[in-house]
Figure 1 (cartoon, rainbow, N blue to C red):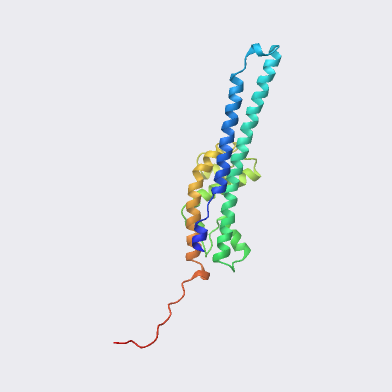
Figure 2 (cartoon, rainbow, N blue to C red; figure 1 turned 120 degrees about the vertical axis):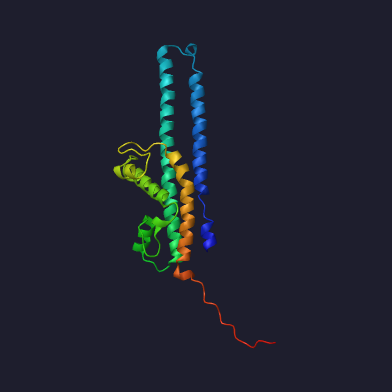
Amino acid sequence: MRTVHLMYSFNVLDEFHSLLSYAAIQSENRIREQYEAIRAENFENEDHLEGYKACLEDDFHQLEEAKKLGHALAITGLYRHVETQKRRVLKTTFPDMGKKKVDKIVSGDPQNEIDCTKLIGFAAVDELRMLNNLIKHAGSKADADIAKKYSGWVENMELQDLDKAYERLKPLVKQFMRAFVNEAFDRSPAFEAAPAKKVTGFIRN
């Protein structure tokens, strides 16, 4: 079971993020080519020309907004994966643990069974948690807590470059999840090593 949980990956989420980036690049190139191909002689008057330019500029703006939304979804999706996998691991290693304690461990609160704050990569998971909450509940604007705790975020400013944040945090989150799985199994009463059996019988010379 330890091996099964250690094999867990974020491949599906990675594929989604890669497809989003590829589609955005293709759309940007198409809009740019259309804009650069504009010739005044192809329009009946200047108003038509300016109207077409405005349409392309609107398309580009909407694409930028779609990219931001996609990157925000990747952040929330990554944190969702972490939460879900933590619960699965705890269900296996601590089957009798109550829901309140499970919720505390999942949220990162230190507990006797597992202290997530001591595991490698915890800071990345904590930053990811804060970003997730800001995206979902604060209109994707940084608050004082994240600005004070993690460099690069400015209070009351829109969360920028979430795609870069995803790529930066993802490998550290993977390290944390591996450490979490090993810690849970090492401390699990359900997976304690069975006592060695006593061998009895006669020893022949």
